[in-house]
Image 1 (cartoon, protein in one colour):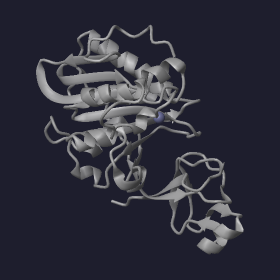
Image 2 (image 1 turned 90 degrees about the vertical axis):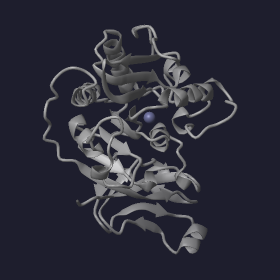
Image 3 (image 1 turned 90 degrees about the horizontal axis):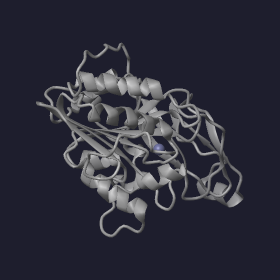
Image 4 (image 1 turned 135 degrees about the horizontal axis):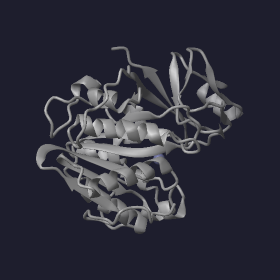
Length: 310
Ligand SMILES: [Zn+2]
């Protein structure tokens, strides 16, 4: 993707923009293009960067940065290092993508609320949001502003489907993602999946983000009230592949009833070891980030989540 339409950088690292308002308020950071072929966030970053350069920030700070620059220019997910999963990195970078992640770690310092923009690789009908927490969204407040909960933020954003829970994290729960990195540094991180990469819902997500910036006082204007009822799903389990393991075909965020077979196992040894020839869910579950077809040992086939009843 060409980046010649962006205003010139005014932030501390390449392709970053920082706007400071005269009034106190939270520091809101928008990251775009940590995966270089997910275009929605890059277009939204352009809009927000222009707002910063036009002096529209009224309170606190609005910070915008592009993620994996090399990958964006090459229109690839990543080239050598998946920047999205490198936020636990310390020490010497192995390539320019890792060097960029170190710059972004610095850029994220002091962030009260991070919005990290992505698109899904597999088809999904609507945008959704992922938050790396197991707590109730009512109990998490945004630092840098009084009495605003994560639940309110998500309602104003207007994207109803929310995924949270341990199984969204890498094994061991180490903060490999930008949102978990911000959580570890005292802020709140939110990952926005702006729909499928081949059918992105850029406009809808951009309107939600601008509405949220008005709500937080970051930019001027009355936010539009949303009557969104959040549907929160708790990700509890990573289903791993195996020899002879084949997952059935699912679109993103597909919900299956209890007792549904989601994968079959054809390898005799694997069946003997596990005592089963199919993988069946024992409660109503949402299938998140499903792979296609055969899934090898050590690879994740999908994540299972259950609806939170509050
Ligand atoms: Zn992504």
